Image 1 (cartoon, rainbow, N blue to C red):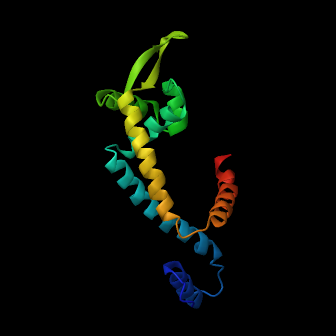
Image 2: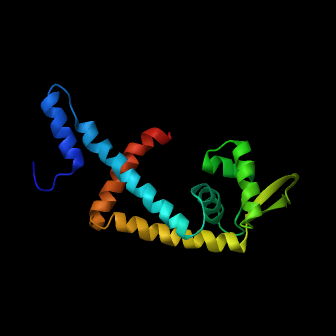
Image 3: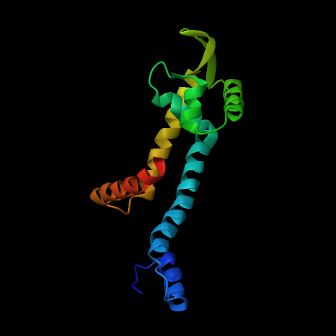
Length: 165
């Protein structure tokens, strides 16, 4: 085993000795993805903690921020972007209203509907969080050259397209 081996190499090598009849190439890829995911989770939690928001708050606030001015979406649009139930979304909006990160407004196009609007406090909070998040994720990838990052992004996109369809 080379000196550049990682824990996955050691695990796969041990399994290959025990079960040489199996192809362990999926473990070589996906075990690394799983391990990297844990590091990413830690980095994201720290970026959100430093911005005084929870990851679920990030999901809603970032969806509103990405929508562009006036930073409004309907609850249905938020549901589609965050993939939670309507009851969960109602609870999340209530909690974000209580923190003054969003407000509910009547939809001028449909008096029976509401729009969720990002407040100035919410925008400041989500902007701080995205800055910290990008910095933290850049640190996780600092061992890769730009062209390697691009190639990896292309390969991961290719793989994820099969799940997102």
